Amino acid sequence: MKESGFLKQMTPSSGRALGIVLISIGIVMLLAFIAANNDAMAMGASTDPVLTGKFNDLAHLRDLYGILGMSAFFLGAFSLIILTERSINPLTAEAEMVSQARMSSQILKGLNLFGNAVYVSKRGAMTGEKVFIPATRGRIKLPKALTDDLIMSPGSDGSTPAMLIAPTGIDLLALCEKEAKRSCAGIGLVALDNDMQSLKSGFGLLKDFRIKESEGHIIVRVEYSGAKTACKAVRTELPDTCRQVSCFGCSCILTGVAKAIGQAVRVEGVDNANDRVIFRLERL
Image (cartoon, rainbow, N blue to C red; front, side):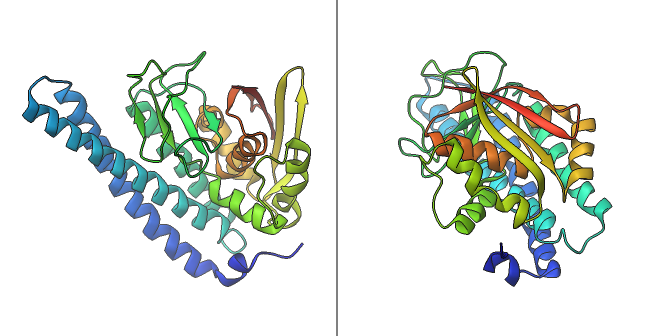
């Protein structure tokens, strides 16, 4: 299978420069996001119209910074790791992938989000798939109204308090769909497994992966190839990454699962003690 035109056109140096710029922008936006969120939480709800207006303004700014920050950061990480993987030292690729995982971990910890990720298929006013990261583990309830603008969901409608962001693997999934020459929306798990083969034969990112249903759950097995050392480093230092904000390769497949079946899937459990990472997914 040939590489996509996009990957052919991007040189290692241009991909690296793009990644550094995007990550820098993302970090600045995320710092602004955290500051705005802290200010909004400190202000709290009020019956005073003036304070309510200020609170709403802060909430809008927080959501804007969150969207821009997460998008820029993960796109930058994608550029650094994927577009330069063929030419940079493996230790550099490992450091970049671990840095992405560490940043995600710190953001979630700072926002008190400790639950397992839920990959949500496109629905309602959403224009694409999202990953829902709840505040607590256990059973969750998605918000009734899901939109692209919803980043921090306080649970005021009875849903589980959480953050809703674009999956780290969303752009890689788009590349796989381009290689397969079709969208994976609603195609089912068997067809998805076939369409995602470019992750092995085309991009050389994964050594192997499997998607199957077993006893009412969806089992996803993933083993990295091109980023194997980086995967091991993340699993060793930050094992919770796999169940919350997975690295781009695993996230690509998990997002694809939700899109292929047209449902939300929750990461019920992860076995990441070995190079072959096993996800156990629950349909919601």
